[in-house]
Image (cartoon, rainbow, N blue to C red; front, side, top):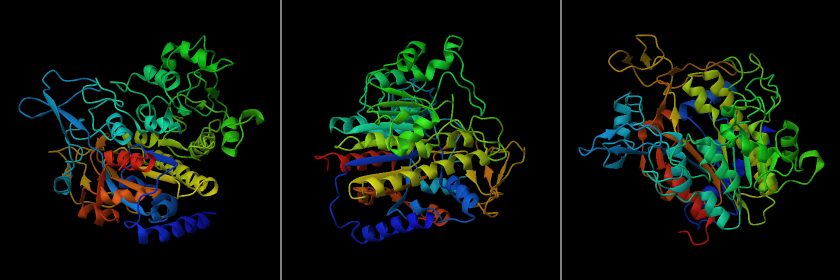
Amino acid sequence: CAARRFVLISLFSAMVVPVYAARPAEKAKNVILMICDGAGFNAWQAASHYQHGRLCAEPFEDFPVHVGCTTYMLNYVDRQGRALFADAGKVPRAAVGTQPQRYDPQRMWRDFNYAKGTNSYIAYTDSAAACTALYTGSKTTRGRIAMNWNGKTELRTIAQIADALGKSTGTISSVQVSHATPGGVWAHNPNRENFGAIFKEMVYRSGLDVIMGAGHPLFGNGKAAAQSSARTVSSVHFKYVGDKRAWDDLSDADGAGGFRLVQRKEDFEAMAAGSGPNGEPLPGRVVGLAQVHDTLQLGRDGRRMAPHDPKNDHVPALSTMSKAALNVLAQDPEGFFLMVEGGAVDWANHQNNLERMIEELTAFKEAIQAVADWVEANSSWDETLLIVTCDHECGMLWGASTYTDCNNNGQFDVGVDRFGSWQRIRSRGKGVLPGHQYGSGGHTTTLVPLWAIGAGSQRFATLVDGVDRRAAAIWCFSGKYVDNTDVFAVMNAAMSPGAP
């Protein structure tokens, strides 16, 4: 029951906090990174208000580490030091170098528009640069997947480090498996939009053992998705799985690259319960493609959450995928690294669709609970590190009446709309959408939350970059914040024998 889970984690927190800074960091056998794409503090609070009617009701909120996290990337600059807009994976002709965007708490709370700037990637990161920072500890420019700023040098990812230590590795997502965040766990590419090349690297030239998510070429997005023949499907449908030739290789009897292909919901559920498909042993390497093209649930018809718009019932939940991946990876006696992404939260916020955003974030929270339960049943917090964070905020989500939308376009427009005051997301009761207002259809540079528990998590206390006191007052945490590159530093130090 939920109460039991809360007590277990609370007791662990009570044990850890008194010695938080005193004892040396433990080495982690297992490292799990969970990324909620596009969810800032206000998204988490909106989901909590809807689900519970109040805040501070989530078990993970009692993890011993709870800080903010900066998400900025590198901008290209010209000879005058001016930031230049760049398309994903492109270097502007006038660029002579790069500089970090940074996060300035004073400007953040003085200027409502600061977080989104001109609605371009000059003010904020994209998911490719953000995941590169999380996985490699290095900042990069827009669109780069584990590559340096100009796309010419590969950066070593935490999954590669884990693999070199003899650990198994995995990546799962609620969106396409070769999208930026799941693909960037191992793949290296100067442009995040090269989905086919990213997938082929994941399958044919990586040490990954688990790849799970959406992107199935023979299915659509809806509840009544029907399988098509590979012979009749347009080639564009195969882009997330390499191409038709790669799909034919993966889906034949012997799989590809040593991977077993799993597609049916019941096979994911079998692995989550500890056995392989059809009662067989768990596979050693698995590509799990849910029978849906874009996302597990967000892409279905309508804009309402279930039950108003019924969910796809032929695909696994993210929590099921998480348990399945953990069971496969745990067969390695040396341990594992796993990344779990709730990718469609970002997509819902791009659409300014609070209902579907809450539905997606709730599914991600269920995955957090499933992971925590698995650790307590099959491992321990003494040997496992769990970090939960976000790659960036999306939607500029605030409480109702934060600004006056003078032109009624649902966005904050400088010189047209009038900012009033910072308004919190307000509860209207359990099961009722909270009072809210979107200010953008894009990303922002606002702080995002980070929670951590387990082996080596105390290292975050040594990496604090600053304190945002206004954020502390509005979002009810210490106000201390780290950078997304620090996530890599903590994971690497927890996992690697020689790391400081």
